[in-house]
Amino acid sequence: MNHSLRRPPSLLVKALIVTFGTVAALLLVVFFFVRVSIREQVRQTIAENLEVSQRTIAMLERRRQNELRAQAANLAENPTLKAALDTYAAGAFGSDAGAHDQFLATIRRELEKLAARVDADALILVDGRGASLATVGTLADRWARGRPVITPQHREDGGEFDGVVQAGDDTYRVVGIPLVLDDGVTIGSLYLATALDRRYAEQLDRVSRARIAIVADGSVIATTLSPSAAREFEAGLAQGSPAQGVLSLDGASQAYLQLAAVGSAGFYAVSSIDGASTIAMRRTNQSLVAIAAGAIGLGLLGSVWLAKILTEPIGQLSASFAEIAASHDVDARLPLSGSSRELDMLTETFNALMASVADAEAQTEAAYAGAIRALAAALDARDPYTAGHSDRVSVLSVGIGRVLGLSGEDIDVLRLGALLHDIGKIGVSDEILRKPGPLTPSEYDHIKQHTVFGAKILRSVPFLARHLVIVELHHERPDGRGYPHGLQGDDVPLLARVVHVADAFDAITSARAYRAARSDQEALRELWRCSGTEFDAEIVGALAAALPGVASNTDTLHREALSA
Image 1 (tube, one colour):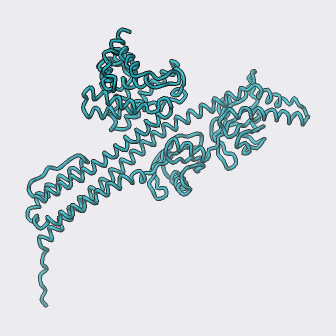
Image 2 (tube, rainbow, N blue to C red; image 1 turned 90 degrees about the horizontal axis):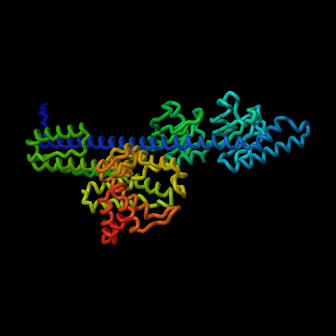
Image 3 (tube, one colour; image 1 turned 180 degrees about the horizontal axis):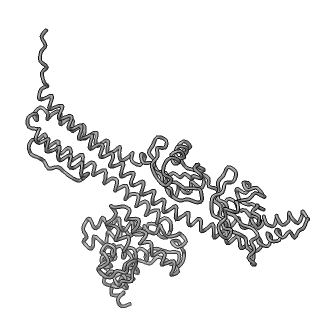
């Protein structure tokens, strides 16, 4: 029986196999790299956002703690309440049940008056033995009369308390202050209780813009997660790190971070990694599929002619691909070899692929910028008198920059930097930011810190590094009397000086609660008067030239300011 020798595959088949194998492998490597890169960027962005939320929530919780302590301390000094409790404790009514009930009614009436002045779910008064005498508030029925609020060993020095207490099936954050008579005798304590429930979690959700889970003793007691996700989070937290990590909740990858802790309760923010990366990955996948289809088509057309001449050029090309993949340089472009049209087309395809990756990164930066713009708009909206201020300063700064002949790159930095110049005011309280009258020296010192706060925010976002000098130094002055560093003259960057003038002009021409808006001419006259000391004279002149209908009066306004 004759057996014919097995014939080796043709060179065309080998070329097809090699071409398709190489193209497929490269596309898979790039596809995997792009997915991992985008996912890692999204993960890093979410981690940074959670850290910002952590700082914000920690600040709010400290403020809430201080406010509750201050409220409790203020209420504990109520003379009528202390007098009623002292009389009750002394047993002045004897065995008279009517007098006993009358004193309790008096105590309750005083508590109801005090409850209207505090933001708490329950206000509880206890006697010197720790037993509750009277409770008022929306959740007063959860605290039975005679029941101790906390055990004595849980109190802090001086009888004060700030922690978590279980009442029935509910968990509360409780702040307690002792009631002390003038002679130093403690006759009881006053407790403010706030329920750690879904309403509390929803408040934190709105602030952090992430899902919230409040955990006490290993159990989720309140959350904005779905019930199934809450159960999975509770189980995952028991096995993982209590501070931060990544869990799979409802089939999706979720990052979590502990925002704050009060007693045995921890407050956690949870944000979806998969959800945040879906849009970016969808666009990238579409580009990669189109590029892959084109690459495979080129392989089909070119494999017949490239059978003998592809070995060396493809080897060189593969080495270049590996170098780029190893360096992760998405901006790298391969030069055309000129050895053949097909190889050059393959090189161009790879360059187009890398361009799409670079474009994906640019879109990520654009998303950052959009979020920052929204944050700046939200910041302006905190005060109706400054609504639109950042946008107007941005427009004015760009106009000044064009008159000064700045480059397109500097104009772009000015546009976004001016939009962000007051971003640090997110760290300034509403009481100061929205004060209807002039600020006190201490309030002014506090609000001056917004330049430092803004610089800290921008340092966490690398692509906003160019705008850092505007945010941090836009209140510096030529005479060195500005802040935060007291720079002088040309030591102040030009872009920061431009935004300083634009910011002042908009402030003068905008109405405030304590004064009316002034006209453009009056504002320019004031800027000219202070030029050389508070403002750069050249930039004031550029502003005057940039304002429509004002440029012709620039010399007149300047002379009037100098003679004033």
